[in-house]
Length: 132
Image (tube, rainbow, N blue to C red; front, side, top):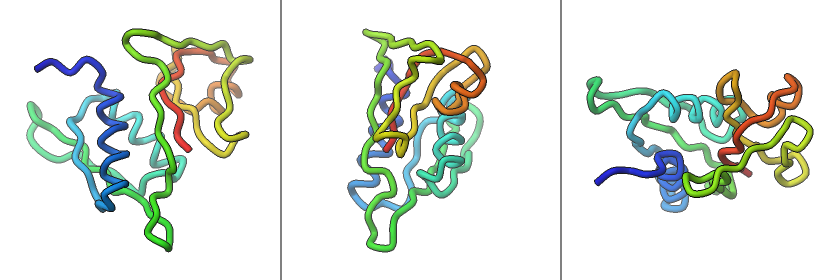
């Protein structure tokens, strides 16, 4: 079966693993997903990630982050732009998540970055997901 939305699949795997209390989860790898995992790591929503497996079947193993009370660090993940409805915003119209406490993941002409980074560089692009 062909996967129509790999980003939504990645976010769903992270959401389900954190709800189940798993320490790690495996996600089929692609350069796009590796870039998203890098953004989640640099913003502090996941502890770390690594690539495992041989080239045709590489996986990203993401180590999830929890608070002292064993609650997931991220409360929610939401896919914004979908294959059926793409959402694009200019740098002046980049949305804020929870008044700036969350992160917007964007795809710009300069690669994947957070909404804050895109705003500072005066770049618009496709709004991929909200993480809070």
